[in-house]
Image (cartoon, rainbow, N blue to C red; front, side):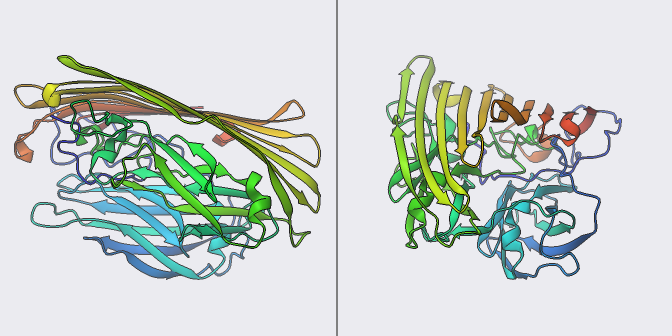
Length: 528
């Protein structure tokens, strides 16, 4: 059985609400008709203890692919400069339904990308919070709201997705945010002529129920497997400015809540980022001098390795701009552009157990300067990617396994107005899993996922900020396929440990562990 059998419209899901503590409960022998509401170990959004105002952004029931449309109005009574803005989605669904991809945009700017958990017959409720302070410029103005969680409701798939999205604005010392947030709607960008910093963010997701749902499992056309791609499983999200490569990134290998043909892995604890799709960021400041000429420039995002004409990837783009208040026109130039080129190889070894070994790498350096009212500022961005994977499968794909690692290392050096500052970020994503289908139609998936990152900022040889993240999910679930729901006799355990230390962690340290069995939350332990 292919990894794709039983997988349909999957999505990028929501950060589930965290219960105060796990309640002790008897673990049933197998999954029943109800289970614990979705929960993740990620920390909640911290907010200041100041006066706040709440605005309802959207409230809708999704039965099809008709988007909710409304109008956003800034809050009264909390000013227009906020210390933090928190988006919260509360959802509920019951019956039978697949996971569904969703997004929220205001004034054309996508501020949230998510998906839904799969429901129990008796129904589930979940919530997610996201810090959206960086979009303050957009939220100061009245604007159109669009929200969509595409869904199908019929005699078989009965789950109507009921959601409410709010924004809470906290007063206090205003946060440092971009001066403008510009949606990229037609592939062209005209920046303010006094832009001194430019960052693109791309909400890149492979989804839609086809082969790109599991892009990391595709094989070259010469290998016998249900999903093929000429260049194999490597994918790379690239951004170009006027046709010139400006940034490269490894896409996060999202696993949605029906993933790996086994929804019983995800009913309570989803995989990392499945409930909060984070954008890829590209620092385009080396191109600011070019972009500031007052003309529209071509900005294109593409996915290297995606077969021509194959659907399945979405990559909406926002452009974040910081402006120089002391100068009407900031000039500058691109001073360095070194592209080592993408190397990618996949070697197929045939046999009773097929094996595909893949290695890829890419490194890009861009540098430039801008002449601002406070002097010349030079920015150098270095980014290097590396991907290795071993994919094993049998004829008929009754055994399908992957052990993969992606590395995405970046450094940004800013030199101007005092000692140079360098921020180094190292991201590592891992996936190690096996699905087997026995002669008794019992399907078992054992899977471990890792999302790790470390970041450090130094100035004049001294560390000024740092953080370390380790988010690890592990699951083992078995069920009988090709039978009615009440005959699946599903069993499964899952766990997640989320550790965050340093400047980004509440109080400098956050450590939470969750564990489940047959849909019951058996452990919820916090340290720090």
